[in-house]
Image (cartoon, rainbow, N blue to C red):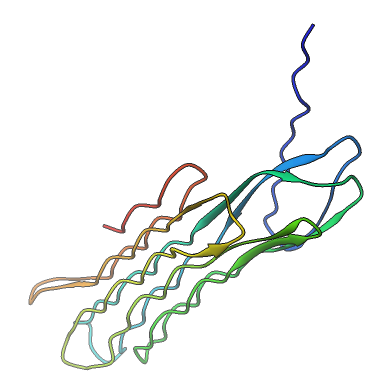
Length: 174
């Protein structure tokens, strides 16, 4: 009679550590970078539209050989800060990491959206989706944030890019 391999899932929403359980010799790791922050717009005028932040990457490492009792450090990247009402750009999303004896896997965060610093009405650019990481078997890219949209009658801030998934790239903001 054949037996199915032991499978379980452990999800981290904050930084911490992972100890390899008894009987486990191989793991699959999915690391997600944080999204970039949206750009800010000058408070003095309602005619500005900032850009949306880019989505974080996903680094996948399959069949990583481990030893029971090994401890791995899990670091969750922080989301990018939003731009200020002085028109600054949004912050870059943080890099997330899974690191220990068998190696380090990282996924980078998305770029910050462009801010608008003029008082005459303008649109900021969207942040780039993350396309980099380290130690992966497969890397999926985050989607780009969209540019702010501005006409004489309408201003709309850009949408954030989609974060990469464990099986595909993130979509562009729209």
